[in-house]
Amino acid sequence: MEDSRSFEVAFAAAEGAVEALERGELTLDDSVRRYEDGFKALRRCYEVLRSYEKRIEVLGSELGAVAEGAEEPVWKPASSSSLLRGALEAAGRDEDLPRVREGDEAEGGEGGTGGDGEGDDA
Image (cartoon, rainbow, N blue to C red; front, top):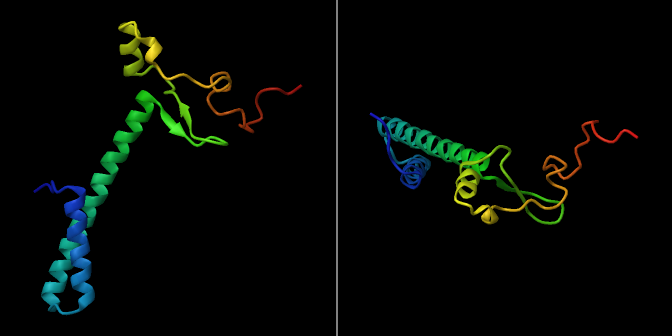
């Protein structure tokens, strides 16, 4: 049977199992049962977190993301044409697209601090 609990419900169940085990008032049988329940709940928490992490990665690749800049967060556009970009351009609304700060686009969006040995050798 698939566990469909939300993250919050699963986390509360795992937390409850830990608290019950820490009190030390359970029989051995109940302790093992609570440990198993807590472990299943924790596994569900990780599943939910992984699914959200994947969603965020997809959104970042489709729409772009905010990255740490030297002084402030910087908008980093998607590396390929995104669905949003295509839809806005098709609708003639490309003025609504996020703008890249000057210099970011020419430097591959890395801010020019690559250190990869490529670029100006002169």
